[in-house]
Length: 199
Ligand SMILES: Cc1cc2nc3c(=O)[nH]c(=O)nc-3n(C[C@H](O)[C@H](O)[C@H](O)COP(=O)(O)OP(=O)(O)OC[C@H]3O[C@@H](n4cnc5c(N)ncnc54)[C@H](O)[C@@H]3O)c2cc1C
Image (cartoon, rainbow, N blue to C red; front, side, top):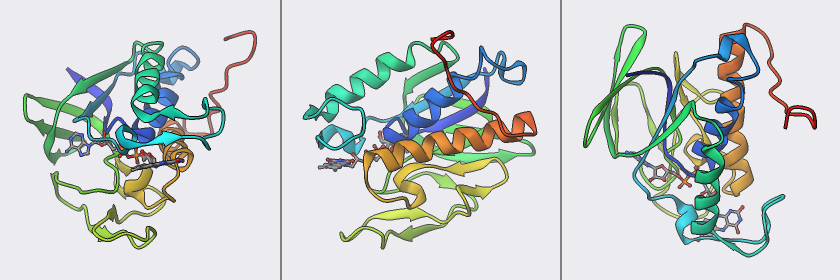
């Protein structure tokens, strides 16, 4: 199956991106029937965190419990599929990307790398891994980008893009990349807000 967008990484940024993408399908003709795949190998920093200062999130929540809530939230959007996979290679073939992973290959028009700041272990032409000097700890990385774009249709979101390390920054960066993708599809700014009438 071919996907419109493959997001690699299901942490704060990957969910921020997927939830925003999935929420557009029922609201806009240009988003109708779009399909999104999230591939993740379960190494999110959320698994070792506890959150007291995330806007709107229950204080003191364990990161593992928050991940479970995000997975449940994603189920509201059938266009979004989450798969446990370790991605090893991304190859561009003309206008498409082939994503190679441990148990299968996947095809998409757009890729979002939401792989966090710990390491980048995917072979992918054009990705430049840099030392993450925005964080006062050694051996952390980000991926060189301009306004979240690495190259045509290849985006980076979350701590991998070099945003500050707070959950909301990572999650918001994922949502921002989704909005950039909407702009590309719609040819204009698209606002995906629910109201009391649509909720
Ligand atoms: C101990 C700790 C405490 C924290 N406390 C707070 C706090 O109190 N408040 C706050 O705001 N923030 C806190 N944070 C920060 C917050 O957790 C991060 O900002 C957030 O998790 C970053 O989201 P992300 O999506 O960029 O990366 P991550 O959440 O790390 O997600 C990256 C995902 O990419 C996946 N991935 C990577 N490579 C591959 C691959 N090749 N194939 C498939 N999947 C891949 C990983 O498995 C992972 O699930 C804390 C972090 C830590 C470590």
